[in-house]
Image (tube, rainbow, N blue to C red):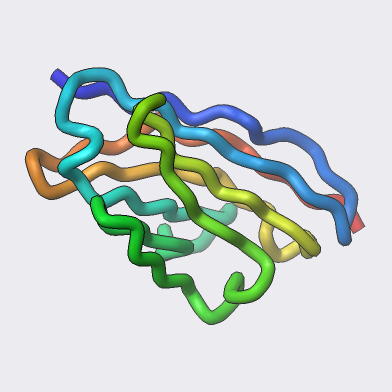
Length: 114
């Protein structure tokens, strides 16, 4: 059983930065693609960023140029560097690992104050 644990959320001022981490247990991490999603109150969960097992990335238009997804296969960890944060970035952020199975984390809250 693979478990994903997100961390790094919290309260951040608009214009600030923070970095989220998602650590995966098990041995399938390096073979799986990793994705960050987010869900704001009263809204549907939405795609944020994606990284393949070979390191190719793509982003939602709303975060392009501000957020960076990366992975460290030696640490079984995927990161989301979030810069120039806006109040509309406030959400619970979830990571997902898929390919060899499909796994989700429990989420971490990011609140951006204006």
